[in-house]
Amino acid sequence: MYFLPATSVVFYLWLGLCSLLIVKTLIQKQEKEPVLVVGENGIQLQNTQFYPFSEIEKVMAFSSKKLKFRSISFKLYFKKGAPVEFCVDDLNVKPQYLLDVINEKIK
Image: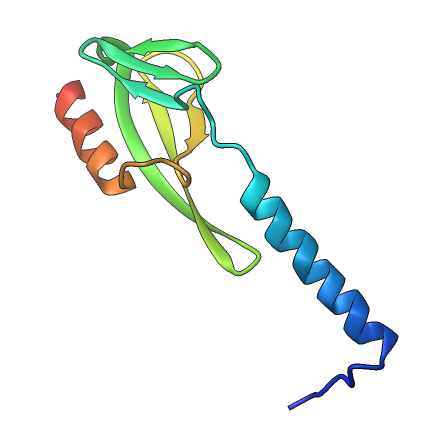
């Protein structure tokens, strides 16, 4: 185990960095605009683009590693056009539930 003495400059730098991270986390504002809206007729993303269920062929979930954390994103594949990918990490709903709802709607 490594120990930093309280009189060390590195100790105070480390303490300052930890304090900044805590303050930033506490004052960070939550999004007021919904990032993803799953409606009766389709999906609307934060960029206000609307994708009707009739045009969506399938949706797939992907997991990738960012630093030490896992990130989950969905990719919508369309009958015509390029796929669209969006992140579902910071939502109030579990990604598996969203995936199930979207798959049920596109059947």
